Length: 235
Image (cartoon, rainbow, N blue to C red; front, top):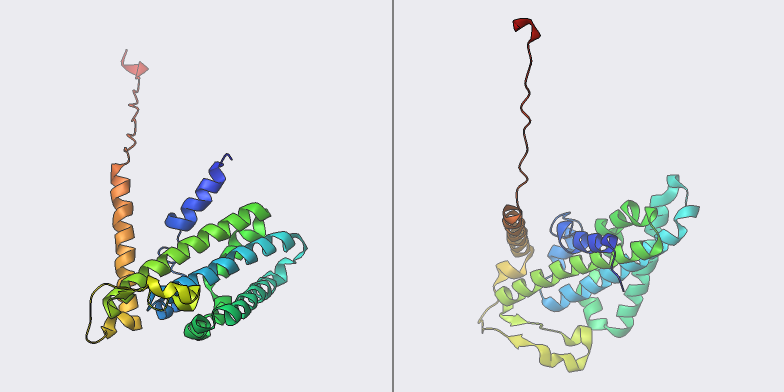
């Protein structure tokens, strides 16, 4: 299948250039509060990803029949429907993780990243492009959650993928990895201040990578044209 430049641009925007977590800094409340472990981060990231794809596709389908004056309430209703669906599914199949995420699961409705994509892109583009945009934005947001959760869990508890059975079932308990042994938990990494500090480092690393990439690009040299004035009076 030939991938068009439009899809490449959407992937680049969602995963890196315009990442909702690292660049737009949207949805930071659940991002900073829930990512104390990798399992929680992955669970919230997947829930947000599914809501983004579903709401973007639905908004794109109904965009022609929604009056501009009431488009935001309609978009919120669509997002709330998908959040309720995800919430019921997690309550039924991953009850432990559902309890662990707590209030931050229904709060996906107010995630600015989801409402922002519905308003800025899905309401103006066809279903395929809107769905792909939701997928890429969701993957970019999930990647930030996973990296942040992994760093905080290793620093705070010395483990990785603790409680994986809450998300993936009882077989996943073997995925738990003890990186090093801690007598007591490192509270700064587990509590929200540690999340703020770690998030700051991630944003700084992204900025450094972008600057290095910009330096490697060949610089365009401006060609200056010298103007010559001819004075006929001097002849």
